[in-house]
Amino acid sequence: MKAVIIEDEEIIAKVLENKIKKVAPDVDVVHVLPSLKTARKWFGENAEPDLLFMDIQLSDGVSFDIFNDFSLKCPVIFTTAYDEYAIRAFKVNGVDYLLKPVKETELAAAIDKGRKLLGKNEKPPADLAELIKSLANPSGSSKYKEKFIVNVRNQWMPINTKDIACFSKEVLNYIYLMNGEKYMIDYVTLEEVEELLDPRQFCRANRQFIINIEAIQTVKPVENSKLIIKLKEPNHKLEIDMSRLKSPEFKKWMDR
Image 1 (cartoon, rainbow, N blue to C red):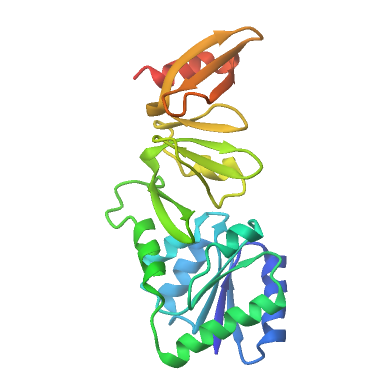
Image 2: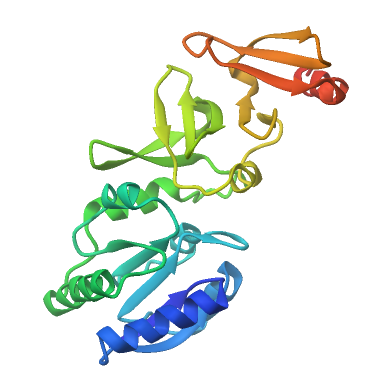
């Protein structure tokens, strides 16, 4: 069984490859692809493998974008550095999410799932296909992220970016929707999130918050050279501070 790894950290990729050889000697890793760019080139020139190991966050984008360009039918095992309990919520039949550093027992189980899919000649489950479809942007009309995926009662649900009032860095990263709902998102830092957003629509207020211009109720100068940004209901209890040094730029951003 031939496999390909998409992973931008060379050491992590090598460790994963060694573990694959240990738990599944019949799986031959034919190539390690370190970026979206190299992955696109490789899949454009080669037949898809029997099994694909794919990191989620790459140095040049999100690995889901691969599916915008190629209709891959092979089982996919995603890997991520996120919290273990979040990962358990994203289990899907036939494919898997593995927490970094990958445990050999979980890796063996994931490979077995892929092996069974291949043996039955089945396609990936519909919910994964729908997820990939929701993340795709066939028209190519926007270079910014249009949807984020959240977990709701053990199901993946796409959220339109325009419906997000703000992104918040707490113990983990969360989004607050315009209707007040709050969900965790699978991103390690707000810096990663910020790069995916339209800067005309979203502004980095401070280290903890990225805000949607449509969610702002008022901005008030206060003591200690700060601005207090108050969001519209039902998120009005969120008062977000910003340095006055950013005041001229922020006002220009708001004054369209």
